[in-house]
Length: 100
Image (cartoon, rainbow, N blue to C red; front, side, top):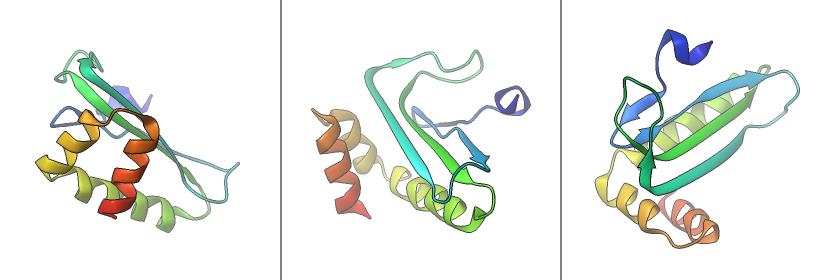
């Protein structure tokens, strides 16, 4: 339903889908990287990185803070390139920790 209202593809080959849940007490982030890109939806460019956030409904502040921090990191082209060029999931995590 969320994607039908407005795509969470934000440009620069990135999608930031997000949702809240009553079943969580802290935010969860799942990252997907495809160097070749995937078709995310009919209206957006190819997406190479998906950062999916699930946040607690009762603590929207932490969830929104995580979204903002990630968005700031992804605004920088050099950061996006490093993440796309990473050779393993652990390298993606290491890069993100170094940029935070």
